[in-house]
Image (cartoon, rainbow, N blue to C red; front, top):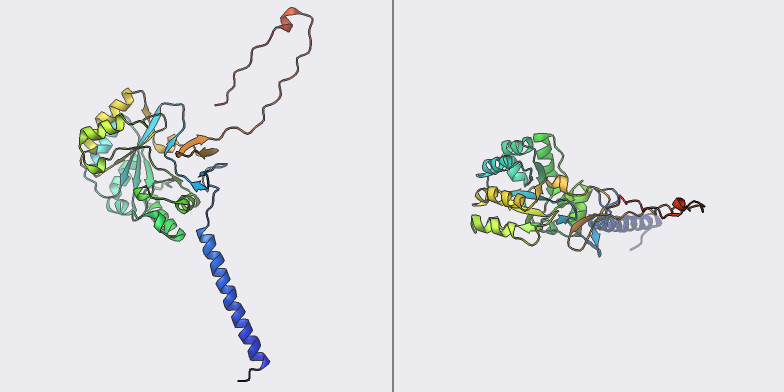
Amino acid sequence: MHIDKKSLWGIKACIFMTAFAAVLGIVWGQMEKAVFTTAGVGDNSCTTVNGRELPIYCVDTKENMVSISFDAAWGNDDTDEILAVLEKNDVKATFFMTGGWVEDYPEDVKKIWEAGHDLANHSENHKNMSQLSANECRNELMEVHNKVCELTGYEMTLFRPPYGDYDNEVICQASRCGYYTVQWSIDSLDWKNYGVDDIIERVCNHKALKPGAIILCHNGADYTADALDTLIKRIKEAGYSFVPISELIHKENYEMDHEGRQHVKESTVTPSPTPATMPSNTPQDNQKMPTPHSNAA
């Protein structure tokens, strides 16, 4: 079969464009899957440890403060009781909510917000985030984000992956959406419905109950509301105060250790040299001056 020059050039151009489109698709796909180690939230901060992106499990702080959080994904029978106990004890908490829960209980979302608690993101559909594409991750975050914003005007910045399931991409996509990813250091296991005493003893005697701890509870569990008052009182009696997670975590200039503990970065500023002391003939001027106290943490 004879092919003239014009047709041959057309075939070559078609092949080139097809190959170019294929390469472009591969490159774009790799960009979508890329791991960004520079956080999208937190100036001069890093969430990478040994090549792995880590969420915040707890916070390094010298202050005796902890946070209590509630994952809201299913039931709602005990939300009013939980809010009443928190108010009675003057405790502000953090509520991680799914899109379905926000949609089903919009008035409760408003109550939580009006009571001064953190509103936080628990994804739209409570899926295993590590099994989703980058685009799906962002959709899971932003759908519920927009629902809460429409209801309250509040732009959420805290995200907890359902089931605690994450990988590098989940952390990075959350960061790109303006979120700090937060797990927990103390699990009440209240969802297993072992009883009031089990919840109290498990949390209050936990080895991780230290300054900067983050406690995980759930609304909709059988015994959480009944255990909450005693749990809070015992933790306060141990010398701790409660703050919402938004006030516990560092927002910038931080780094993570291998346990998921968030630290303020050590200062990289070189201290100014001490001025040389001129010799003096008077005895009092030859005495050693006291060293000034450092303000560095």
